[in-house]
Length: 125
Image (cartoon, rainbow, N blue to C red):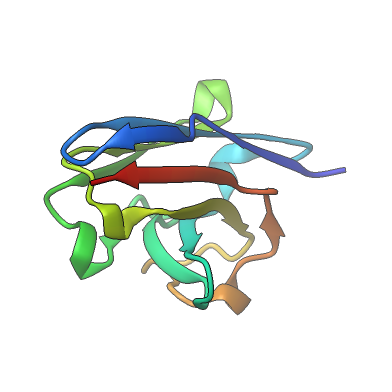
């Protein structure tokens, strides 16, 4: 059974940093693409960053230069380093796994097969 668990969320002041982690089990971690999504209150879930099976990386424009996605296949864990956080980054952040061996990073929700429960990130002004 595939399990996906996020951690590392919390409350931080604007300009601060957080590192989210996503631990996956029940699958061959290195064989899949992975992504981070977020959902702010009253808004739709949106793509934040992703690493394809090919190792290609993609970010949504609003986080480029501030967020860094990475993965450690030996630890079955993906990370999202978030720097220079802004109040508009406040959301529940979700980790997702894409079973397709894609060259490019999928950015749509329906491309991802497994999801974590989410971790809350709150950035105060």
